[in-house]
Image (cartoon, rainbow, N blue to C red; front, side, top):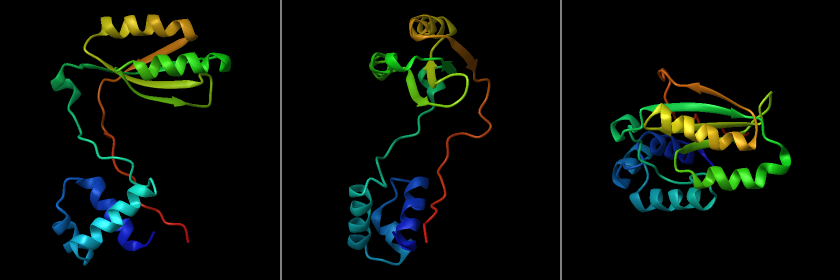
Length: 147
């Protein structure tokens, strides 16, 4: 990966819908050359997808929460199937510390969140934090190259 690839990744993180011609102008290459480089980055799995950023509140998901779960290792396969099948689970991470899983969820109401926590509690002890505000929303990462 060279400086042009780094710049392409930065541009695409800011606006993945930018036309190839506009991207090409910023990196001083032709549109076909930019297209080939992006295809290469996708093939290398450096670029893993393109996503629309959605306002969940406008869709009726008024509650965002983080649920910590103390999960026994032997229950992981069953648990993974459960959380992968739940559309309200936005993210699930295996973490260090007192709890082994950190789950980010979105629900229309606290009642629905409570029902989910009840279902989740069959896997182990939980602790829940409801999000009041998000002063730093999800954002891109800086491209750091290895020399």
